[in-house]
Length: 159
Image (cartoon, rainbow, N blue to C red; front, side, top):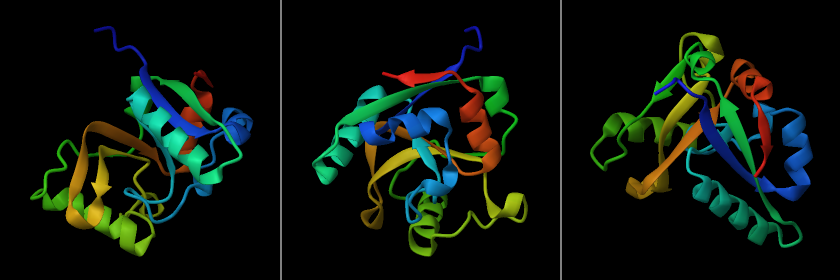
């Protein structure tokens, strides 16, 4: 253990690659997602590739692409983070948060930071209405300008 950088992957399309490499904008994310509007990454490269392929199949005229970010853990630790370790059916705290983000589409309902956590980390839902997650897959989402600045200062490249 050397407190090495955390490697994160983002699945996207080739047509968006240059824009993302130039700078992440959390406001461009979709609203009604597991953890709310933001920029989503994963520590699992194969998952990022799957997301990119799914996007490519939806658009039909573009190619999948994956971007790698190497984020300093000490810098990440300076942000307001919400972390969920479990996504089991009966873990109501996780599911109430997902339902809030998926149904209301607003911020995270915090009293500070304009209602947002900077970063949310947790399982990926397979079916949020049925409380199912995908085994051994995570998501790390960035929701504020502070969080985007961390990504924009981090080394990043096409994988």
